[in-house]
Structure formats: structure tokens, C-alpha cells
Amino acid sequence: MKLDHMVVMVRSLEASLPWYETLLSLIGFTRSRAHVWGNADGIYLDLKQAEPDTRDYERRGPGLNHLGFTALTEGDLDRVRAGMTSAGFEVPEKQYIGSEIATFFRDPDGMRIEVTVYS
Figure (cartoon, rainbow, N blue to C red):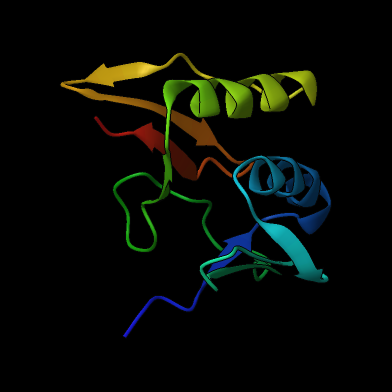
């Protein structure tokens, strides 16, 4: 079996949709319908509005910790970083973890989206 889709609950669709639209288009996803993006591998990400009065994302709490995507080259990672910067979103520094190079972006609710180059 293969991964089919992921659902990410967000505090505010209004705040999160521009962020995800930018990042997902930079890493090869296209919007297939409202709040849903898919890639060439048939993997889909669906954003949904969280219920009111629920707790915001916590790094070590229950639930999804982070989503990880692979960039083929450091240049690909740099293009994603530049695209997020030019769209006005905060871009953290690259992390060098052994032979890997990663950036852990944070969505408006604080959930991390990792883009990593493996060598």
C-alpha cells in the first residue's frame, strides 16, 4: 500500500491557505480542489478548519509532529526557501544534519514542514 493523503487541521484557513498554497506549489503539488493539493505520486494534502476551543499544535504533544518532503538537490531546497521568502513568509536557517541539509518551515499554527536533501 502507499500513502494516499494527509489531513492537516489548522486554526485559521484564512491564515494558513496562502502559506500552504505557496509552499506546496514550490515543492511540486498542485491544487486539485478547494483546500486540497496533490502531487505526481498521487499523494494529497487536505487542509481543514480545526474546531474552536481546541489546543494549538504542540511539538511533542499528540498528533502529527511534522511532514517531511525530499528535495533532489540543495538548489531545489534553495528555490523553495527563496519562494517562501519572496512570498513574505519566515524562513528558518538551513540545518546541516550529518550529510543531510534540511529546512523546517513552520506553518501559521506552528506545525513543521521539513524539506530535506539527502546525499
